Length: 337
Ligand SMILES: [Zn+2]
Image 1 (cartoon, rainbow, N blue to C red):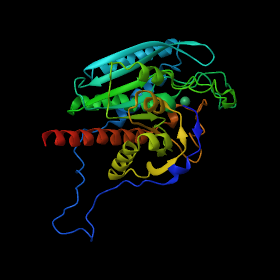
Image 2 (tube, rainbow, N blue to C red):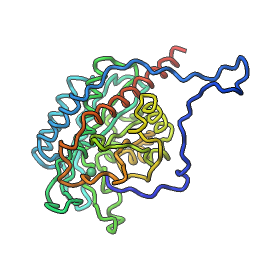
Image 3 (cartoon, protein in one colour):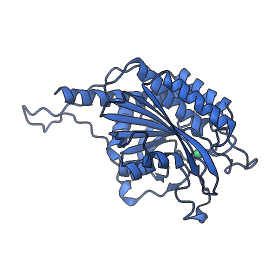
Image 4 (tube, rainbow, N blue to C red):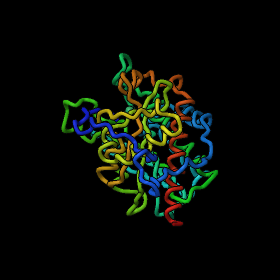
């Protein structure tokens, strides 16, 4: 992921999460709709998530066509197979903007594959092959502790957590490859266009199951640093606004409103954009964006494990788990009428 575009004027209208409550004007005997109570969910283990981030970084930079990349893919698929019903290993060759053929692997871990009501959590797991935002060693690959490993670790821990207390709905964990080999120079447009997020573009055009549908998706990217905060991203608020509101409102109910900040910022070309555009599944991006943008570590050699916070990983994981089980409860309550 690279670009942030300006926020469209129409997005400047902040949308508040509606929490239906009784007020003084409510007529007698017309009870307002009650928001479902927060359901009890299995605990999200931040230590475990942190260990999966560490394990990825320990392989070395996970750039396509490298041994570290291939070993990490095998390890992730192996771990996921212990927790879910079906793991799809989707291999393809992505052609980068400079013509490089990248041997790429998307990994999709399906829980309850037969369920027609589904949601997915995604993250890219590859890392950037250059440190183009750094002052030194710009041609060397970054470790991608935050940009790649942290969000992937949260997604993996979600799979392990769900395994312990199965919801009725289907849940897919999707790990996209080849996200971070994009052309950084916008002056090279139009060639730079669509040079990022090659794994999600491939998957959205060739889903692991023909005709794949999900009610919504949540993409995680750079969700691991101690100084993270997540305002609502603009593409998400435009193309999947109800999902964005649902997630931020759930975070607020859990007491994480200072982490999941309810204001909208610009538009990021990240994996969620292509899922919305190509396969039309409403999908949002949870991505770090502060006063320093994506952070001083972004696409530099500072993107190391010493920036990664168990607390942040744990908070993001807890919100995702609550969203999954909350949605599960609402859907199964409807089915049972
Ligand atoms: Zn990146």
